[in-house]
Image (spheres, rainbow, N blue to C red):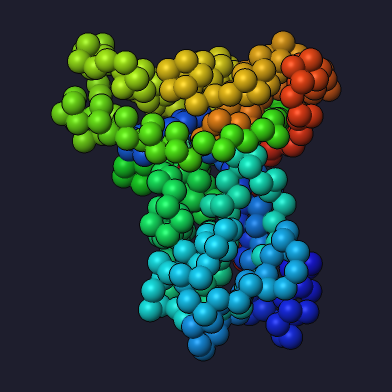
Length: 370
Ligand code: GLA
């Protein structure tokens, strides 16, 4: 394994453990996690591999095969910068339970594609440390610790979806997660037997202000819930009555969150009934709601979705936080070339960057490799 070779070359010994954690796409349930709602992500066959050996002192050394040069050596957590903060954040949240560590990281998730490379990084390192120090954390506890690292150490106010997907997903399944109770179910997602495939369309466009807009949406939802006198937008049962009490952006955000939760439940119902061919309309409806009510889409994502449908996709939507990143399209296998061609042509006509297409078969969650 490449990461093991790199670890040996840098630190002069083999790593004590190696863990892999995947990235994810979200089938449906977008911007619902921090509203105590429902999500339905699945893990993708791309991810981060972490080779780790604990140290007796508090020094942390981190090497990434994706950034050139020598390992970064940190004498204290405050010294961490850039991508190393996702790793150090995990160690920081573990507090006295761990000292320092020697770490080597390898990954194949395109950065900025909205496929949760940061959650994969956190969960791979947290899983390795859990294993090495016999901490006995469950996959959900690993997800929560990783989310806390991102919220409190990195400073990104994300919900629980990405880390939970990376830690809990099962091969061939999507993860139906209730973000309030944290109860979850692995729902079989066998697209191939229905002649279908899920295509990831990486728009290669990433907008700088995404973090600020994310925090703004979150604050708008919390403010709307306060005005409605409910703990979270998840608790809105009378949508029409709620909309009467709200105005402007808060009204639109509420409309999206409440209807999106219903779409997740409807989609799970269709999957359970074996009606995989019918889920496309829900994907399309989710995209329109994210575009028009939640306002987190982008020109590239809209063009990707429209061109995929024109090319023969059964449904398509942006996936993840939005403002660039990736869309997903549910495509009959024999239409894959036509859909890719349709999207590529539309991107060329608009003068966008060339899109990248990735296959998305539901992959396993975090697991030990060596
Ligand atoms: C990002 C966040 C998640 C979730 C999605 C939107 O991926 O990390 O917690 O809020 O956006 O659904």
